[in-house]
Each structure stands twice: as structure tokens, then as C-alpha cells.
Length: 173
Image 1: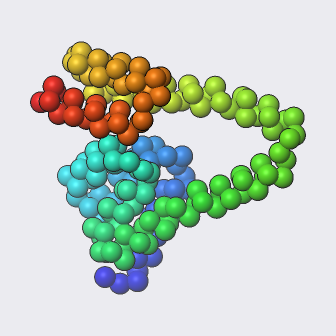
Image 2: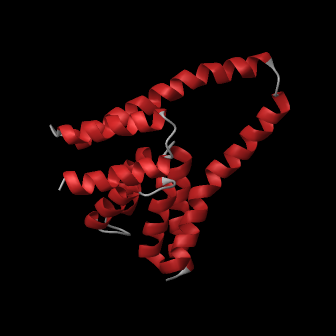
Image 3: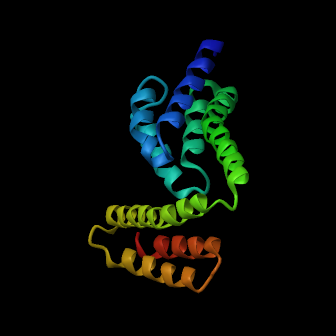
């Protein structure tokens, strides 16, 4: 494993995390950049599936897996650094701007405008996740409905996920 391989990993994940807004959105570019050069198509499907259910950032999980596969633990570290660098720098900038303009009327209006758009995006993501997994199985919809009610009742999100996973393992075999 040479420095060239590590540099390639760094550039791949830097590009992916500069050009895409999230882990799921980055899958297309990640696929074209890594399959078959760094991982097989089967490995890509595995890591993409696991990144959907594991806690944390999809982009970071994908980077660590591909980096490890391509160049061991050094590859994981390099790919992870490239994955977290763009959003970290951007968030430092956003935090500085928000701090600087806190209390400004336009900033308050901006946040009030973004909030419903963000809620709509989250709803579309939820619908797409259910649509992919539903496939005519009413049990999936029942688990989703019970999970929604539990969240509205302020049940711990971790508990909701664990119980839903256990229910899925038992009922959806």
C-alpha cells in the first residue's frame, strides 16, 4: 500500500463529500469512483445496506469501509478524514456566521423558512424508505405507525429502533 493509494482515497472522498449533500445522495458517485477499482459490486451493496441501518453518518461509514478495504487501517483513517473535512469546515463557517448575525431579523426569517422545507425533506425520505421496504407487507406499515406513535409520546429513539428491529426480526422473516 503506497502513498499514491492513500492520496487517491483522500481525493475520492473529498470529492464525494464536497459534491453531495448526504450519504444516500453520494451513493451514485461513490459507486462510479470505487467499483471495481477499490471494492467489488457485492461489497458495495453490503456496505450501502449496512450504512442505512447503523447509527451515524452514512458518508463516514462508507468511507471507513472502502478505505479499509483499499488500504487497511491507514486507508480507513485517510478516507474518514476526507469524509469529515468538508462538512466540518463548512459547519465552522456557518456557526461563525450564525454567531455573528444572531438576533438579526433576516436570520430568524431564514431559519423559519428552512424549517418547513427540512421537515418536508425528512417526510419524503421517510416515505421513500417505507416505499422500498413496504412491498405489500402491512407489518412494515404497522411497525412504522407504532414507531411514530412511540416517538410522539417521547419514547427514547434508541428504544424505538431496538424494539422495531426485534419486531422486524420476529415478524418479517
